[in-house]
Amino acid sequence: MADAHLHPLLIVISAPSGGGKTTLCKQLLLANPSMTRAVTCTTRPPRPGEQDGVDYYFLDAGSFLKRVQAGNFLEHATVFGHSYGILKSEVLGKLRLGRDVLLNVDVQGAATIRERAEDDAELKQALVQVFLTPPSLGILEERLKRRGTDSAQVIQKRLSVAKQEIAQWKNFDYLIISTSIAEDLRRMQCVIEAEKMRVTRLSGTQPLEL
Image 1: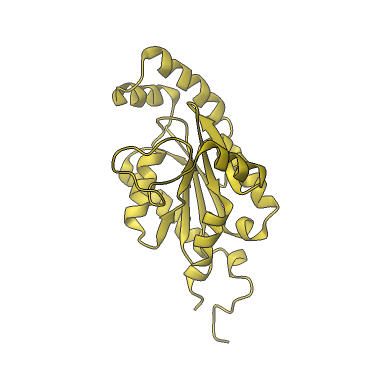
Image 2: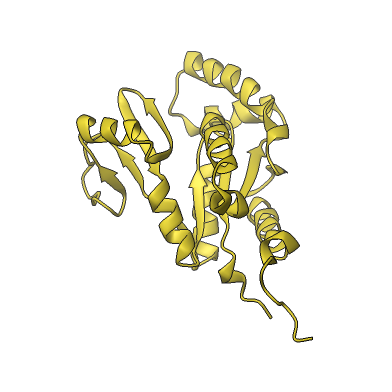
């Protein structure tokens, strides 16, 4: 039988802010030892305890810009004055080692990755896009309030952005309506298992001894 690890996945998970994607990604990595996350480049300074090459690749603004101009990033963005980017070489390197690669990105980042994959057969073959969203904006608002990290004004702004993001769900391969951490993980595992058995991923191999 063909080894599933010969056909690793590039799993992109997106969700509106407060939608639970960070929690789901942590659970997935714990449940799947062969899965790895792509280490992101950033121009922000390291926080206490963070290690270069483990938590992030810490770059100065000039080095980051050179990589942008060279087209090295699969996707990149600037958030609160600091730049973040995922190197294409980082993702492809891990895929070629047979590791499933997990990316936690916003809707805009997912759209950029989707576009880049159209021009790269290796990325396109591996790409699986999942959109995670709460059942309603009301439940999302409750989650954001429960986090206790944002003011009422910021929460309303996040909800306005979330409404636009949720409208993009049709651009993804899978939609998971978030219920509980355990159920979200179970559904995500089902997606991964199904994708591992997709016939188009097995092209060029002989799964059975005929």
